[in-house]
Image (cartoon, rainbow, N blue to C red; front, side, top):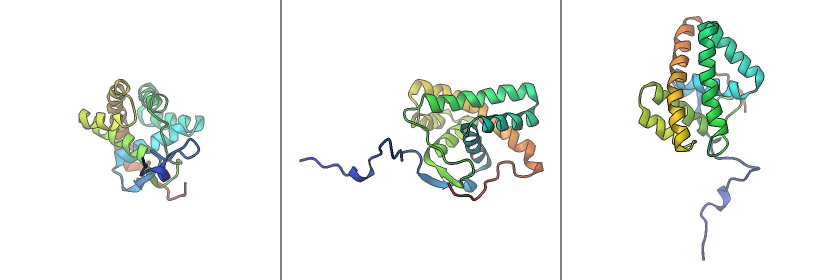
Length: 168
């Protein structure tokens, strides 16, 4: 006789729980991690979100450098969304919660930015196949550096990456 201890927690296509469960609050994250989660959410929010991200990058970096930085971000998110081992789960743009996949994404970018590629790979491998994870970590380093640069350049002008305490 066999028995599964996980019968009640089985994820189904109608209930894709894995990766979306809240693991913390966005406001509790360091600025880089919080910023890249917000960039991920805004980018995935549709065309208007992508335009807003591109406009923000252009305001900070100028049109030529912004094009490079936005393309790096787009490439990384495309890898995460299209090549992932399962659908990438995220919370609503204004949600104060932090999802598991969002946390892994943020930690991957932060580790890559810090030059800790082994840790970055560990986070990437939770979401991506090995060959894609390697590519994602390389791009994540550039994305993290540009996000840090944005954070530093706009910190004097207020809280660009502030979170709103709204519901899902």
